[in-house]
Image (cartoon, rainbow, N blue to C red):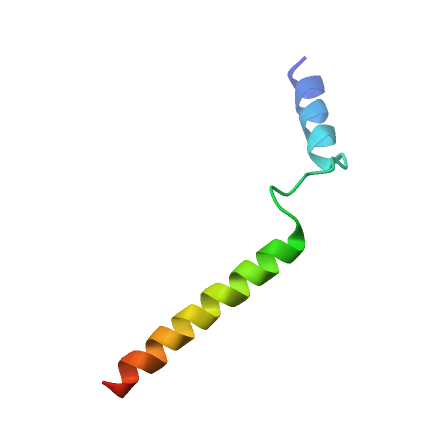
Length: 49
């Protein structure tokens, strides 16, 4: 019984389940780019002082 349960768990973990992102991939790229640009701006701005 336990062996069948463990085999079922392994098979379920290897099954190809389509996972949905909460937003389109383009949004993640734009968000990351904007965040890095803001951080770069702040670092360069602090360097001037």
